[in-house]
Amino acid sequence: MKNQELTFVNHLGELRKRLIITLLAFIVFLFGSFMFVQEIYEWLIRDLNRDLAVLGPSEILWVYFMISGVSAFALTIPIAAHQTWLFVKPGLTKKERKITLAYIPGLFTLFVTGLSFGYFVVYPIVLNFLLSLSKGTFETMFTAEKYFKFMINLTLPFGLLFEIPLIAMFLTSIGVINPILLSKARKMSYFLLTLLAIFITPPDIMSDILVIVPLFVLYEFSVTLSKIVYRKKIKKQQSDNNIIPLKKTS
Image (cartoon, rainbow, N blue to C red):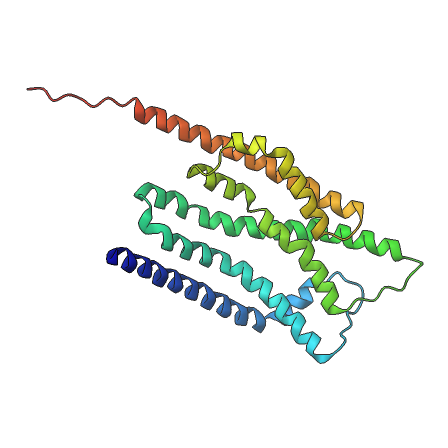
């Protein structure tokens, strides 16, 4: 019992260490991003043909921290993934360590890809569509806070959702899910993804479609990747079972 308590305390200490390192990395990236936030801000509004209004001095600081926070969050992802890997590493085999470590670059790449898709594809289409509704009827004024909240709400979820295929591959490789389970859950998954799309987009059908369709494609892509990993896993198990040890000859 005492040994179990010591092991549990050691695990908590290790977890605390990994969380502190991740938090420190986020803080460093946050301050680093804040040093260049003016350049990032100007780049983000480069195609906006209007000035952004602020309702008070504190709103400027809030907008800058919002931009810096998203930048720091993106940069911290590989650090957080690596610290998670170091935490579970003692319980993995040598091969499992190699496989799981290979997922870390993919996490960051897919997150940036998702952000890029949301920012360069979905965001301008939705923004131009909404502005077209007010043309000739309303005088549209943007505050900096609402503008960047709108931008982040349309882009950040894609960064997270683009991780789905990699997560599906990883969970399949360790046996938590399989393509059969994903196929059976297709209808429910489509329903939940539709609700999610409606929740994160403005209340218009075009925005919903622009988000729903990519989410469905991501899910089907996840199923396909899960099938590939699952087949390789089954083949390896079959080949291992067919190995017959050689008898020693006298």
